[in-house]
Every structure is written in C-alpha cells, then in structure tokens.
Image (cartoon, rainbow, N blue to C red; front, side):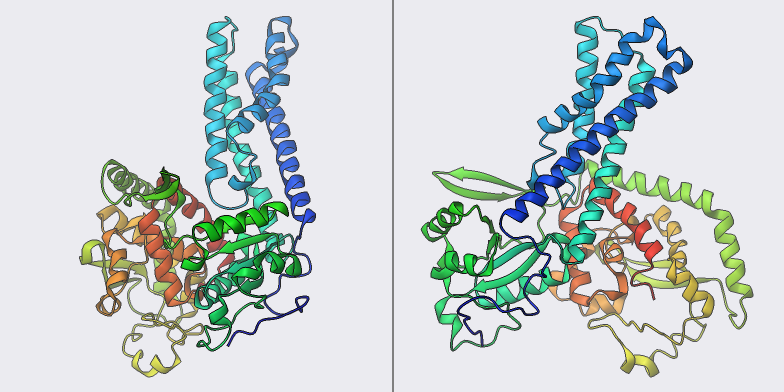
Length: 496
C-alpha cells in the first residue's frame, strides 16, 4: 500500500543520487554541454579545413594564387557552426539520447556543401574540388564522432548518478511502479525518480502496485511536491484524471518555476519518426504511421545484407578455417566444428542455422538433467556456467565468434545482418499472439537484444527489444546497432 509522505523527502533507494542536478544546476550543466559542443565543432571545422588545405596544396599553400583558400579555411569553422545552428543541432531536445542529433550533423554537412557550391557558381569563386572532397566529409564524420564521444562521457556520468534530471512521476500506481523500475534500470536516459503523486483513491485501500517511489501527495499536490522534492521534471503518465484542462493547469503551474513537463504516451515502443501531431480544432491528434515492413527500403536492405555478408565471408575465410581447425583439434572436443540447429525465420518458415560448436557433442542429451538450473525467466534456457560448454566454446562465446558461420545464413537469405533473435521452434510454440509479431521480419546475426545485454536480459525485455526493432526499423537503426555490436563484443557483456 502506498504511503503519502509529508515534509521533506527522506533519502531512500528511489531518490536521485546526491550528484543529480536540481533547479539552476540543471540548466548550468546543459549550458556547459552546449558550449563544449560549440567549441568542439569549431575545432573540428578548423582542423578539417586545415587538413584539406595541406593535403590538396601541400607546400604550395602559401603561394598568392591559393590565398583565397586560406581565407576559406579560416571561414569554414564559423560557417560550420552556423550550419549546425540552422539545423538546430544545439537544441537540447535533440541532444543526449537518440539519433536525431547525428542526423542533424549529417544534414548540416550536406547543406554546407550545397551552399559552398552555389556561392562558388554565383560569385565565380573558384574552389578546388579536391579541397571540398576532403574537407566536407571529414568535418561531418569528425563532428559525429566527437559528439558521440561527448555523449558517451555524459552517459557515464549519468550511470554514476551525476547530473540526472530529478523526476516526479504523476499517474496510477501500477504505471508509476513500472516506469520507475525501468528508469532506475536504464540510467542512460538521464532521469532519476525522486517521488510520485497518485490519485487520492489509490493512496489508501488499493492493492499494492509494487515498489513505489516516495508518494508526495495526490494529483492536486503536484506543484507543492515539485518544490519539496527539488524536482526539475514532471512526467505525467496516461490517466483520465490528468487530461484536458487539468493537464493545462498543471503546465501553467510548472511554467512559473521553469519545470519541464513530459506527457508519456500510451503507445509502446513507437519511435518518434513514426508519429506526427496534427491539430484538429485545437486538439492535438497523434498520427501513427505503419511500420516499414515492405517496399523499396526492404529490398535495398536485402541486397545490402547479402552482398555485405558475402564480402565478409571472403575476407574472414582464413579466420573461419582456423577456428574450425582449433575446434576439431581442441583437447576432449571431438565432433564436427559446425553446429546445425533448426530455427524459425520470417513468417514462421523453418531453416537450419549454422554456428561454430561450443558444447560437447552430447549437450542435447544432458539438457534434461540441467533444467532445474535454468537462470532464464522465460522460454530460453541459459546457465552462466553451463557444464556442457567446452573451454574453447567459452572463448568463442565471449567474443561472439561462434556466430560467424551465420553469415552463410545471411547469404542464403534465411537471416539479415540485423534483426530479432532467431528463436527455436519450441519457443515459438509457446508464444502469445503479441510475440508472433517478431516473426514478420528475418532474424538477425545481431540486434537490439545483443547490444543491450544479451543473456543478461530478462525474457520480457528481450522480446520487447525485438518488437521495438520490428516496429521502428530504419537504415540508421541498423547502422547504429552494427556499431554498438562491436562495443558489446569487446565488453563481452552478457556473453555466456
């Protein structure tokens, strides 16, 4: 049963750590972050232009005929800042999480290149093509890379509980408990829950919704609770009591103290690029587009998958042969180097998956005696120290090398480079209707499930990530997952 707390909020497990930002401190670190971005972008522009000048003209840079390019080199960093500002790459709502920031940097590079071409033609300003070909891709790639590095530094500080937004949740108990649990686990969002406000009827006499943050009052006490908890952000969960006029009045109250208001949508795992707000007679209507499951983009993905997998197979052939030889000759190994198993692909079609064998040949026969030791909470069978895994197999799993033969499945068209985890038939047989949604696309060699913890994830969380990928797929998402896969493999997180 939730208990309403009067007076100052006591320190507890739900409260944001001492380093969490509050009030003016929140805005000061954001301002410093944006200032750091401006400085980094200025240096990136200057360095890229300088490299382009040196590589294109070499020792002849100081000649009078190249003086115009020297001025261009000194001007380009400031033009880069203007391009980024016009593309709103410094607005805080596009920073910190998501891919929108990187997309805006890329657009800025294209816009600046186009502007340079137009100015060159309009004013007969001759710019060496080699200079542009070097400078513009370099400034764009370096800009994205350094912004990514700054963001990772910020995420590490959030993981330590520093500079977190102090969040007050407003909604019904079950929704508050669920969101608080997820925000507590996923600190990379930068939100630290410090309290909650529940409906009056739910603060007494209702079933216990689970572990709750400190309850600081009812819906009528939100403004006062913000001050008592030192919150700088209010998240309103979907509930009929906080809609329409009530939500508008709350926004007016929070505006006075410059407290951010976030309204959580009831849509589950729908990315922002699939939603559009269309006002109808003053009422904001949220239009949700269908996921991109067919069409030209999927055909391009199919071609890119197969061609890339074929090239990787050719390049990695010596490594694959060496690994196969090591598996066959490892002490006490025995059996084939390649393990074949039936999996379920797109639209429920069965196919044979290929992996390097990491277990003893009698692994399937020994499964029954290990069922009681299962550490997974769902259909998966996972043991951190599985006695069936060979010493060579542990090393292969640690660096995900056992999955390299799945490139053959990608070339054959059974799998994609990125997609949901390929399930076993016995898992699919127990799927509820919602989970079968993940079968509308091909399974992947890697995916959100791998870059988010792999075997450390709960069954529910792994399914949610797969469904999120299906609903929100894009080329950008695939590229980000492939990059994050390299990091996940190096860290060996959840690999067992």
